Image: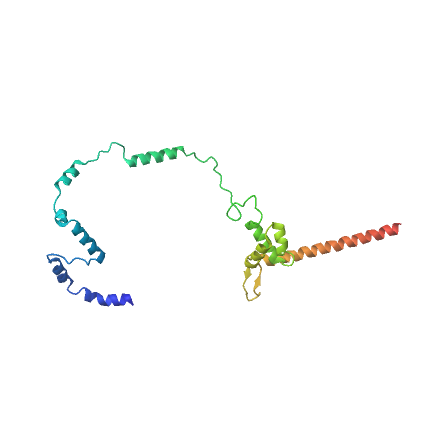
Length: 221
């Protein structure tokens, strides 16, 4: 809206602008800018202290002009630019060139993990591990067990598990397959179920083998 108004008023403002400019320039003395009240008071105090201040300001001071002509500066040193360049070249020459030209080590999370973790703190790797474990099996990986294992406060672990989750991979629906979540949590749950089944099958197999051995020993006796 403002741009439209300014565009509409532009021809009115520029009407006869050249004649108006010549009229202002041809004035003998331009109209001074308005003076603030405190400036007027300062001017009155100055006139009271020195009534001839206007004449002194307009008159050339011969003694001051002569003293200014007698003042001169002679530089005996070197230019500052040359000194700066010399110091920069000296600092560059003193800097040793790198001896190890191997590529820097690439870290998993983009930064070097600390070797020692103080009590009550954890690393990003450990946080991702226990968050994923809790998502896969919340009944087993509880906040109390995680706090005991990683030396953390239980209330801090509970807050982390409440507000932070690992990313899930979402496979959208197609004409042949429905939409499914196939993220890390789902994979961990499947692996946990598989491990549990393998452990139970192994126990059953060991128990059956042990029972057969007992039967053979009894028959031998």
